[in-house]
Figure 1: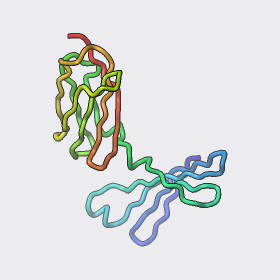
Figure 2 (figure 1 turned 30 degrees about the vertical axis):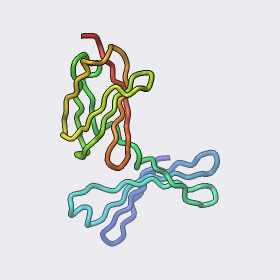
Figure 3 (figure 1 turned 135 degrees about the vertical axis):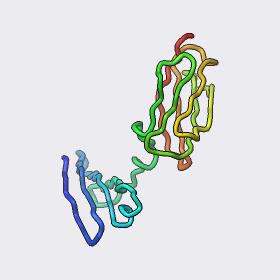
Figure 4 (figure 1 turned 90 degrees about the horizontal axis):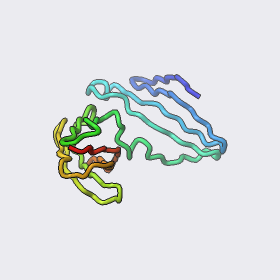
Length: 150
């Protein structure tokens, strides 16, 4: 169920955007919190996900804490034969990138410090590879990288 309800108290706003109830009676709520301090600092709303079981107990969720959203970066061109560009959109912090072959062996790694960096794939054999991106807080993301012949 999509829900759009805002609760205001003093200078803070709590927005409830979505409520889901599963077959076991567990409730998942998602929304945001914003106050005058975050607005004054130019920050955007803090996002939350709250899960409660059928007995009313809070269920810890790391949904937003452990994943780097795919919309925060782009990897192109993909497929590639010589170089791949990694570009950040929303997070301007250092990342660590690892590239694995289909057997799970690490075949490359590098620190991604700038907003945009180019990485050579010329030494890789043509095929499908998996890249993983990890930030300082342990959040990760992964995707496929296709290496074509020269």
